[in-house]
Structure formats: structure tokens, C-alpha cells
Image 1 (cartoon, rainbow, N blue to C red):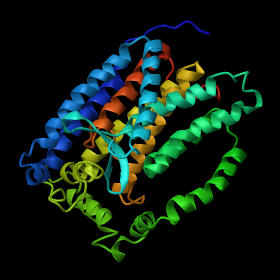
Image 2: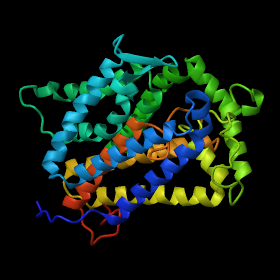
Image 3: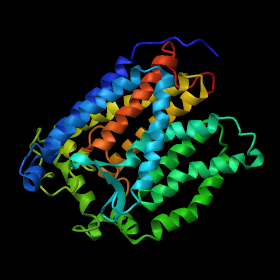
Image 4: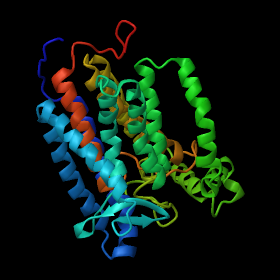
Length: 379
């Protein structure tokens, strides 16, 4: 094992993250002001809460980024247990909060809600790394692979019970990506795809409201006031923005035309107010963060840290891709927020924790002399 040489925090990656958090605060203020006045009598309701989330999240980001990695990893295991326990608690009547037919939240003191699945998104890579790197338990013998299979299935079972299909699909794609990078062969990937077809039928095509979303995606004009409403309003917001945008705060889509303007569809508000130029700038920042995450994963030699870095980056990238695909009408509507830009304390704080770990891994194990993602034909 090569000696560990500690670096300072990656300034480029840190600046990109802080920039998006800043843009996110502007977005929450602009997209939620009218809605907050109408529902709470205070236009700053969501903005002030998001500021408090951002301060706490940034504090955690620097805390985890500067810890000794062994302690950061220990905290990761504790948060993993909390996220899995939280998923169980959401299913217990009186503790879990139901909204829209789903049990995804836990009510906390002070009127705050905690969404355990958001924390699971950043602790899941540690879970996978632990299962992949840990040596077989001799006492289990031939049952060891089956125990690991059960453990890795547990989060998916709990997410299905909520239900939270978006996070379930996000973690599944991330798991397959990690396994593929670490040696999963194409024939195994094809076999997994074939085996997923029955599950896809029961989870999507056999569920009426999910099928309605797919139909609305395929032909939004067939039902423009119901199934296709969100997609059409989102596309109209982008069209109204043009190249340069209508100006900050001047968007019309957020005036109760665009559903979830400060959460799932905040990018449509940005596209209308900041135009194509603003959208492309934000897209480039996201692209840079994903590129650096993949780069860090490739440069780290230790398998555990490599898996964690790849997992955090993959989940982040897939979530950004999914949200952008939805607001641009390229994917069926799905309730996944846009990391750093959408309103939500659980999402923002959990994402900051994840990138605190990524910055820590780069600081402790990164090789800054190399600018390549793939070296000598190997990840």
C-alpha cells in the first residue's frame, strides 16, 4: 500500500459545490416567494429555512472533509444505521408521516420533517463498499454470499414499502454501475436486465398512477390539464426564457402554473428567469462536479474509498440527470429533487455530508499529479 500524503481541500470542487448552494438559495427565494405568501403569509418562509439548512449543511461538509478518514468512516456507519432505522420508522403509524399516499418522512420537533431516504442516498455507497470489501465470514461458509445478498436487498425492500420508486431505481442503477466498474461482465449485466423485466412490470406497468405518468410523458397534449400538465408547463417556462431569460424574479411559471416550482421543477424556473445561458452555466458546474468525482474515484488505489467515491458521484449524477430529463420532457415525471438547487433540508444536508466524504477521500488518498479518469486501461 502506498503511503498516504494529505492534501489541502480541493478548491475547485469546493468552489463548485458552494456556488451551487448559493444559486440554490437564490432559486428557492425566487421560486417560492409567491407560494409562501399564499400559504404562510410570509414570502421568506422557505428561503429562511433553506438558509438554515445551507449553513448547517456547509458546516457538516467542512466537518467531514477535515476529519481523519477513519473517524469520518465511523460516522458514516452510524449515519447508515440511522438511515436504515429511519426507513423502518417511517412505516410505523404515529411516527411516520404520510403525504401523497407515501410514508417517507419522520416528524421532528420544531415543525421539521426528516426524510431518511435522502440520507440513505449518501450512506448507501459505504454500505456497498462494506459488503464488497469485507472478507467472507468464515463461520457462514457457503451462506456468506446469500447473507450479503439479503443485506443489500434490505434497503430496496424498505423503499418499496414506503413506496419510493425514484430512490429505489436510483440506488439500483448505482449498484449496477459500481459492480460493472469492479468487474461485472456484460453477460451478467444482460442477465440482470432480463431479471429486472418482471420487477419493472409489477413496479411500474402494473401500478395505475405510474402508468399515467408514462402516458403523460409519451403524449402530454392528450391530457394537458392533468397527466401532461407538469411537463407542458415546464417546457413553456423554458420557452419563455429564451436565450437570456426573463430576469431574476420575473418568471411567470412559478405563479401557480408550474407545480412544485421550488422543489422538483426549480430548474424550469431557472430556465425561464436566467435563460439558456444560465441553464448551460449551471449544467457545466454540475458536469465539473461529476467529472471531478469520477476522477477522484479513478485516482484512489484503495478499493473501499474508490467504491465510496464512485457511489457518491454516481448517485449525484443520476439524480441530476433524472431531474433534468424530467423538466426537459425527456423522462416521465418523477419526484426527484435537483441536488443543491431544490428546496429541502434532508436533501441539502445529506448531499453536503456525501461531498464532505468525497473531499476527505480526495484529501487523504487523491493523486493530484494525474488528470486522467482512466489510467493504463484500468479504472
